[in-house]
Length: 342
Image (cartoon, rainbow, N blue to C red):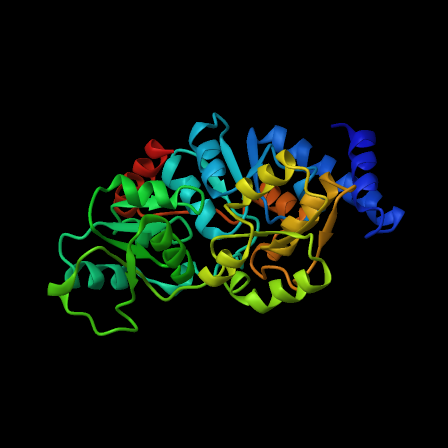
């Protein structure tokens, strides 16, 4: 898009949120980013949780963790700018070690990724020898390095079932583990919460206590209250929500699966139980449909990344992702194995 097209798009989708002067500044910044991106032979990846002005103008590719991981692996550009949180940029570096990988903010962490360490995984592996470890992509590289295979919210069920084993260690999201356990018929247990007799392991999924601080906020009561006022509402929930919240919803899927479902079906009134900026991005593309809002906060980590940060990342080569090669090689095996499944 040229400047006129960029400003026109921003005006169409964000005129109710920004003044004309602010929209002009954002359009100008988008053009500066595109210019320096071309100079540096860079590609920009934008997660679905990015704020609307950035999401709709800057990235070459948008999507969820799985889709963007594939984009990172396939790009022929010299530089990858990952508009997402740090573990996502790490995954890009794991897959493309020869590339310069930048994350626009050094404060783009993740409460879920920080909930577990490589030492925690090693302890679980010692406690349950021989049990395969599935690790959610929302983890740091040293944790992935201790893992047999990674998964995303979009392929977790397929990954667990691909192992053809009765018992699986599934880390670190407690709620995603519960939702996958229901889908696969496994009984989930949490070593950090329960006393476990290792001799009693049957058809089980061994979980952890990590949570996404955004999805942890949604409750069944929230859904019931909305349905009381809007009985015709269609509820879509991310699988990082509590299992009882997913059960009370009409559809659950990854961010991309949610977006595709809304695009495919004629949902005239829907409630989205996931990060707020994604709701803004969906609403911008579907202005004639009624989206009911519940959340009042954004993911504090995703919110660290704005358009100016993205420009500065390219201009000043900040903040570059580095991973020790021995860790990267071991982490690569778990990520690549996931990508082979789909």
